[in-house]
Length: 596
Image (cartoon, rainbow, N blue to C red):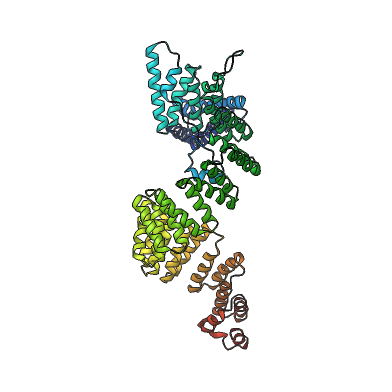
């Protein structure tokens, strides 16, 4: 029996292990959000410390004091410092901005592209760029030449980091700089931009507001003339963007309006006001607002383009087409408008009109691969497949790394019956994009239909190594295995596909066929029944079930299912007359009457 002192030590050690485990979970969470080498190193040390502590506790091993100190240091003390830092930062942000953004501040991933941002509903026009180093240096009141030179060097390094999108490095430099020099609005403006790029929108708001406070005249003095406040509109505009990202849309609109008071020609601010109204669910007000903007400058082709884009995003494609055509009427070589108009027309199924627009786009931008890509897509949808193949060839000529160009070229060539060329194009697609599931599937299908089954299976295996969750490749592999008589392996492939996609009734259909070939009739019936649960009006399923029941000598049930199949699809009469599986019931008058 343990002494009271030994039991107390065990309780203390158990508590320490629990705390270490909690801190390990916290560090893992922090690592996912922050993705920093220092956090990774801390996590590894915590893992090692926790492992030592647990093994010592389980084995009831008395460790030396140095070991105890090390795992407490790495398992509790160091992560505790991170925790306290994050907690204090969170409390400070809540007090300053009234916004809770979580205990750990995440480093956001950049949007893949502008189009994905639009589709996600998070699109807002970009920030006005930073003030350049020479402009900031003019505003700095530094007496000593050596301090001035060091400051210039730091700002140039920060600007290089911004240009290279290394915002963490730029943040480190500016975070120190704005603490040392607190009377330069340009510094706080740039710091606000850096915070925005990092996704620290609350901190960006704070920095922009400090920049604005510095530009305001002291109490009792006359406000500066508008031409002396030429930078304030930039600050108000970017402040509006940061507030927009924080979903404070009303405040964002106020900030955009102040920017427009100083610079009425700031078109992006007008669009962002409309977008903020859309984000608030006030679609009609957003459209009405922007319509009034156009009334003040009806000849401005870009305003018509933006209104067309807003109409498209609110689902009014007819009005979108109208405004986009009006924009092109005023500027016939406006490539961005051509591209959007083509997409809207395609969405409406007006492929011939889209075709004309994209032809025009290729003339405006003859070196733009996207123009030919859109043209090729429209040509394919319109049935002009030879022309589409030429367009996609132009895409890969302009951009040899365009896997989408090669993929679409391969699809078109396959449709044209030029399988050898299609195979080469699919292989090139896979070379450029090794995890592109559709390329593996299409290539495997072509090879399989040409009797090159072993090559097809090799393609599927390669694809599954890159995409082990791709149920469609297991499915197509199962079909190829079934076609070569490898029914047991086909069943395994179909079962793998079902595990990944249990609601896909086609997989159950093919699984049923493979099980039937293996004479596992009960299992085949079960597979077909599961498919019927998802698609109860599938006549082919009833037909297949009737075949299996016939093979099981259950003629009455077979006849009932065949009757349902023929009621749903009369074409199965001829199929039933020819199928040898029904030999046992072919003599029945009911069967003869059913298939007559």
